[in-house]
Amino acid sequence: MRECTRQRSPGDSSQGFSHRVKILDWKRILNDLDAHGCAILENLVTFEECGALVGLYATDDIFRSRVVMERHGFGRGEYKYFRYPLPGIVSDLRLLIYPQLVPIANRWNEAMGVDVRYPARHADFIARCHEAGQLRPTPLLLQYQPGDYNCLHQDLYGAHIFPIQITILLSEPGRDFTGGEFVLTEQRPRMQSRAEVVPLRQGDAVAFAVHHRPVRGARGVYRVNLRHGVSRLRSGHRHTAGIIFHDAT
Image (cartoon, rainbow, N blue to C red; front, side, top):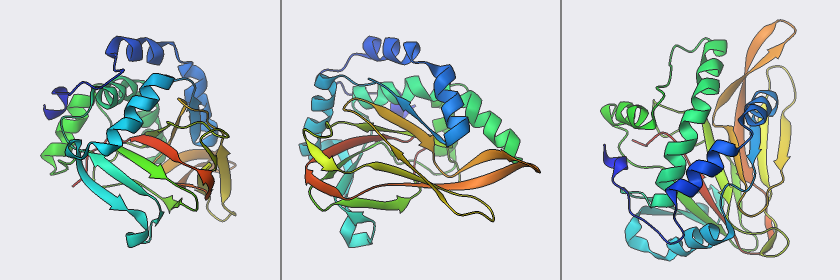
């Protein structure tokens, strides 16, 4: 499997990540995902690891593409998709967090009447993506400067979609930037849309629904549609890392 070949990067420690992921309050995280479509993973990445990830942005040969959002009507700012092999920090987090989310992903699909079920190991899910022609890695780094923003969107990329993804804030609000809040919207059938602004600190991550999630109503379970984005940056510079568990066509 291509993803198993990793490149190491400054501040990377797979044992440190394994412990941090293990001790997270996964009961609370899964309950928040059920209740709100998103959940905060506090202190997932250290200050030093945040700096190491931000520093990777200038290393062009580890990325497969660069996207300037304004050129495509996506907003303002830019991001870069990593190529394989992924940096160790990114690969470790992808491999360690995925199994924790599989039970809720399978439960969501069952509740919504979706036949797809996800294997316990991320390598097996990536093999499924690759067999379907989804070969391009999707983890990415994003950077914003004053006036930049990210329009509401969904990171789908192909037929095989893991229904939850992770965004890690690599900069500190109030010190490195102002504005630039992570925003999630939920479009409910025959109701007005609901917005959620997620307060993050440097090193925190937010897990959130990629596309749909089930919500229980008076007449049973119904499916809601979610989009995410970033509000306008008022000052400074903001960096984030996106951990998407499916690959792209």
